[in-house]
Image 1 (cartoon, helix red, strand yellow):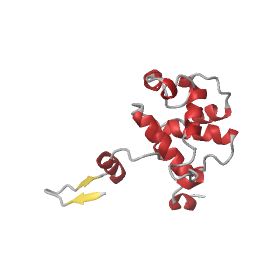
Image 2 (cartoon, helix red, strand yellow; image 1 turned 90 degrees about the horizontal axis):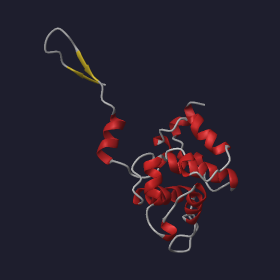
Image 3 (cartoon, one colour; image 1 turned 90 degrees about the vertical axis):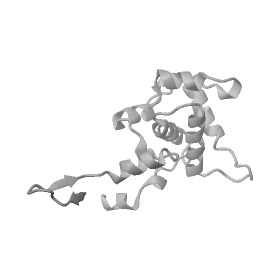
Image 4 (cartoon, one colour; image 1 turned 180 degrees about the vertical axis):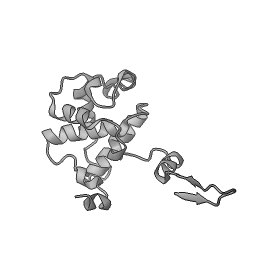
Amino acid sequence: IIRTPPRNSQSTTITISIRETAQQTMGDQGYDPKRSRVNDDTMMDFIRGTVTGEITDVPGIGPAGAKKLAAGEGDDKVTNTYQLIGKFLTLKGPDDDGNKVESMEHCEKFWFWLQDKGISAHRSAIVKAIALKVNGLLPGVYDPDLYEDEDDDDDE
């Protein structure tokens, strides 16, 4: 909150959201699960539900996103949830030096792959949904605790 000196007898208070200003200035800088704008119930329904193969069942993917993911040829073309999960798992493979790809790097790679496919909205929601879904099938693939702030511990 910034208080400006009054020009007359009335005081003026201006509230500026530093977080919003920083996001506008910096733009998207990679995966952040807190940027997910998907309703918690929607996310949990997807995580607990059966994989149907319908790409738009993934929280954050609508018809426009499905079309962008389906563009391309060969392995670059993703038309169903199974292929999207497969792409996510493919990015878990060893890095260029043969080292294991850890959870944070894995999510970053998937986020930037989505960006390269032209997905401009809900990337963090898509990454979070697929990471949590796959972690339920293959525990240890995703570690959501890595993304908690120290301030979050104070709330418990």
